Image (tube, rainbow, N blue to C red):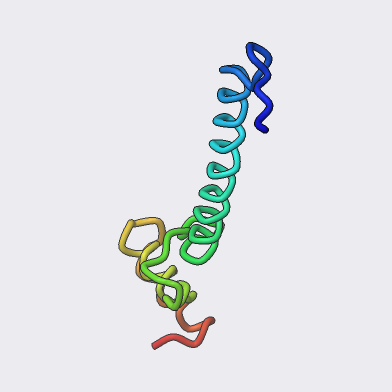
Length: 88
C-alpha cells in the first residue's frame, strides 16, 4: 500500500531549496577546477602570466635589457650592471 500525504508533500519550497543546493555544489566544484588551473598557469608578481607551466621566469639579464629598452637606464649603467651580473 502506498501512503499519500495529500497536501502535505514536499511541495515547491523543497524543490527550490534542493535546486539551490545543487547549484551551490556544482558551483563549488567549478570554482575548485578554475582555482587549480589558475595555479598551474599563473603566479604572483609583475610577470605573472606564463605561456605554459614550463616557461622559465625572466632572468636578470632579460630584465636589465627590458629596462634599457624602455629608457629607464642609460647605456653606461646598462653595461656596468651587465658586467656585475656576469652577462655578455
